[in-house]
Length: 142
Image 1 (cartoon, helix red, strand yellow):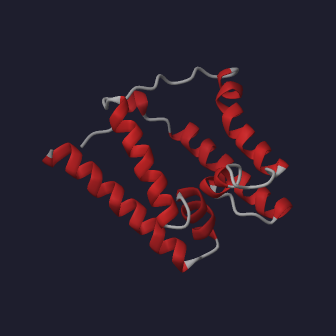
Image 2 (cartoon, one colour):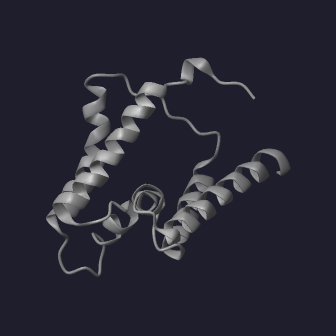
């Protein structure tokens, strides 16, 4: 295994991780809520009577971040070797897993682990193990 040095960006990865941590801390401090993205987005969808302003602001910030970033730095080009139907199926499976696991990687992996939640530790280990196994099967067995 080798590192693709032109694509290796430890400083931007560190900055991104720090911003995710800061957003999670600020949401807990000022709103008392865990920054679980799947839960935040699910609460914006029907049958909720009225979306919360903080949820709309949080999702708006997620959507606006790439445009703000590109004001200062070039955006990387995104590509996938997979066809659109495969990507859609993968997204639906991730959504199903999120509901099954009662949370996503942001809620369990970022916020739950920082709170030393055993449930979040188990969920994160399952997420990661499943991801490793999926990549192995797709790249080496199929």
